[in-house]
Image 1 (cartoon, chains in turn blue, orange):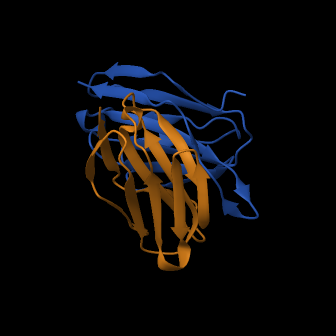
Image 2: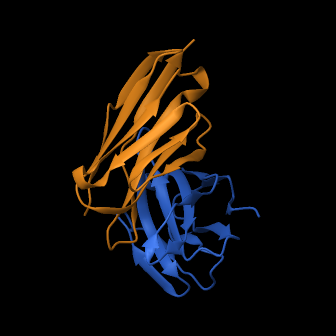
Length: 115
Length: 109
């Protein structure tokens, strides 16, 4: 049982490049989400999913795309990287109990630098 | 959307001291969690506590849902307690986990 696994751990991109951050969970959780954390700040929600085939925008969705084709995987795509997307990215998953979202489990984070 | 405010923003303690961190939220919640982010950036689940009181060793937490606040108590602090403590909530009827800005704690030896 690996929990939430993010890859890669570190990445450097040039402005305008595209890439996909991977997130996988093996806990059969319904809910998955992506956050970014900028220096000295809390986590801000980018996109989230309440189940396979269902995604929605969070607080800061611009510049990012997501899809959820399986319960296990929730990749985050940067279509054209910008220096403002330099940040640490966290993926999280959680399950629902009686229709209520319960505790979230986080991956180790991906440190992305866009130059 | 729901607002989450944490206080104090920064806290410096001498090893062995006790402290109380506060989280206020603006709407009713289904879920409230406390996390510790260590100096290596890892987020560690401390408590899942939408209501009531829980204890785990030197840490304990209380959430008074009707008054929309939660408290995290750290007793006999150690240098390894240093880092940032986050409160995160899910509003009733919602799916999004929203984080507060955190309390940055430094424990001096």
